[in-house]
Length: 422
Image (cartoon, rainbow, N blue to C red; front, side):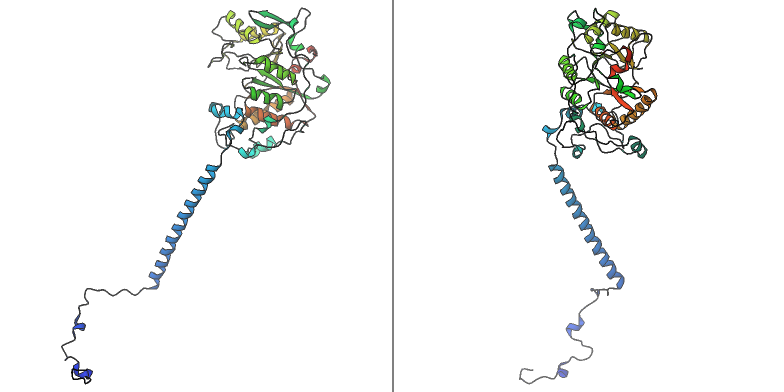
């Protein structure tokens, strides 16, 4: 519509040819048209988006798992007051762990190890022996069953028959430089026979006699009490001469029916056996003085235990003199040496429990049993460490119903015809 108000014909206002309108003359050379998407580019874009979403999902899951693990670990703690004292002592003494190879259960490495395996059953007396794992089958399969708890040491086997003699008899004791030395009485009563545990010899006829002697007890009062309670009364106990309350500990053991002995430290090529130790570098008089202190504690014992075998620095002739001296005081010598002539000696297999790894202990127990069956008798020396004690208890339980085997005090193995009931 023009200024006069009349409608204008579009054709009339159209520009002449060759003179295009201003809008049409814009320069399009700088802009590039978007490419038309193909099927291939669409698929690539969808795949890239899925990969990004999957990556975010994995990262989120990993963070969530790490957070949950931290929360669980922070809340999983064992009450230190409930950890037995002997476990705490092991944790503080990692040198007791002698083998940490994989596929093998070590003694103790952490207070949280195998926490769920400890039984929580109340203690009962006269508990029948529980079935034990098949050691041969276990070795064949190369597996170690998961009874790695030490709760078995807290059990009480039942009532004991107290020994008739708890303290040493005055007629078989002589005072020497403040030491109460055991001696043979004027009437011929021999300490090892009088202080031995009474045992019916009829029970051993036609059977393999096994004696168990626990070595170096007494250094830990709580663990020693567990040993006294957990083991059968026919198990014998040898105490360290360095036990502070030796008299009290031996009285407890004898009241519980246990035959008692004392360890005699012997010089080795490496290490110091202590002030009671018999050493090659000392004179005969000095060693005699140490020997008198070791046996002169005023306790009722049947003999002395020497666990040192080939590692001993003492020559054979000095060991024989020591055995003779022990016998002269009416005591039995227990060690790796065999009897010569009239020596009163009980021999054991050497190095039975030098290795505290429980898997190796089981193999040693199996080997010991086979040897004992062949000889119809055997003496088992058990180190007073929880790993050895636990495996020995399982071993004894597994043989409890075997009618061909009987567990006896050590004195039964000396010489049945020379043994005297107390």
